[in-house]
Amino acid sequence: MAVEKKPSRMYFAGAYVAFGIAFVGVEVLSFLYGVSPADPDFQGNLSVVIVGLHLLGGVVGGFLVAKRSLGDRLQAGTLTGVVAYIIEEVVHAVLYGWGVVGDAYTMLALIGGSIVGALGYDSQMRRLERARSGGPPPRPEGENPGGSPGEPGGTPPGG
Image: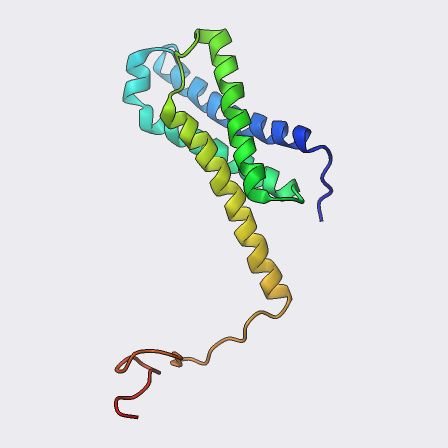
């Protein structure tokens, strides 16, 4: 099991990963198109890709923080996304000016992606724990307890 160090360091590490994936992706795209990331046409034409990069970064950051977290994984994912968005706004304000890069969609993508990443890891751990403990016995093929009449394995009509 992973040992949780300082929660604040863990949240910042996940936030830097989440922000880094989005930031490097947007910078590479702007390099390929030969424009600044602050260019409104660039942002408008590639808004879906930019939001997708933020979502991907959020999922990866939230997953990694949830993996190291011993407490509430949903809270860890949420805080990671919020911190990543704050980092993004500060860095973009320094590089391009306040409010030029990033909007409500990128904020929702970072925070939502972090939550999805944390929930994905939580679901994976529950499934693994269930498999280790034996879990519920598998149902025989064709058996559907409580099925409606007419379904395979369901209660026959009138019986």
